[in-house]
Image (cartoon, rainbow, N blue to C red; front, side):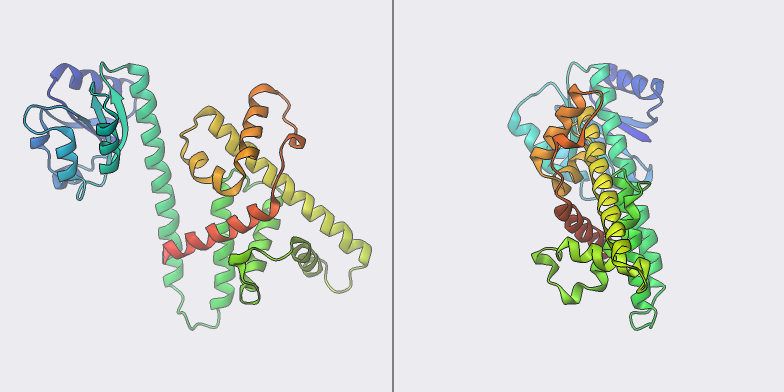
Amino acid sequence: MLFYITDDDEAVRSMLAQIIEDEGLGVVAGEAEDGSLLDGNRLNMLNIDILLIDFLMPVQDGLETIRQIKPLFKGKIIMISQVESKEMIAEAYSLGSEYYITKPINRIEILTIIQKVIERIRLEKSIHEIHKSLNVVLKSYHPLDKQQKTFDEKNIRTSGHVLLSELGIAGENGSKDLLDILEYLHQNEHEHSLHKGVPILKEIFVDLAKKRLGSSASESELKKEIKASEQRVRRAISQSLTHLASLGLADFSNWKFENYASKFFDFTSVRKKMTELKYSSTPSTSLTRINTKKFIQVLYFEAQRVISESQ
């Protein structure tokens, strides 16, 4: 990561640079003693990932500087100041500052906040690369191509797999079942108004079991496969809940926890799972309720969103 430090106090700039480089967080590519010396285009030319900027400076303060550079500057901004006015902090956030560090600066606080911003940058880059890859594949197919339907089905599975990876369950047995369900919903979307909810889950599991086993399968074989598939899906969803809850327990501001926990699960379920993980060394799924239908519906709409953002 490349950093740029703007602060009128040379000692603060030196201390920040030392912490960043001693801890292996990145390289300080430049410094400035006032906001008036900053230019958004120049920061971009230097490929600056993170700008640390003081709130109070003699000529041009941090807020005014952010207003000027933010339309151009593509990196992340961390505000640094001893001013603790809620209104000023709120304005800094609204202008694009990612986090706020208070003075006198504390080494642990600096490390914690910078590491969070670095994690956010890496996740955003990862998602961007995924979208770019999907976009390349999408453009290689003509909309009127006879293979478009097959491609769309593969595409929904690809975006679904990306999401399952983010949810920590791409390697679970039930992940294939979930991808089959996404493909099923995509194939049958014209028959159902999915914005009103997914079809009855039992029907989906029955249709998928018939597809897997073929027309010659007996009633008992179908029932066995349906039950097994339902159990695999529930276990995978439960594992996803555990994964997200553990992320939130370690860091409540974790990007994945913030973005996915409230979408895929009820708040009470997440809170119960976090409490369970905190106080029990042997978590039990019986303590939390899993809403399978909600999870599948959100997964489908999120997979569609990933595709649309790639087009």
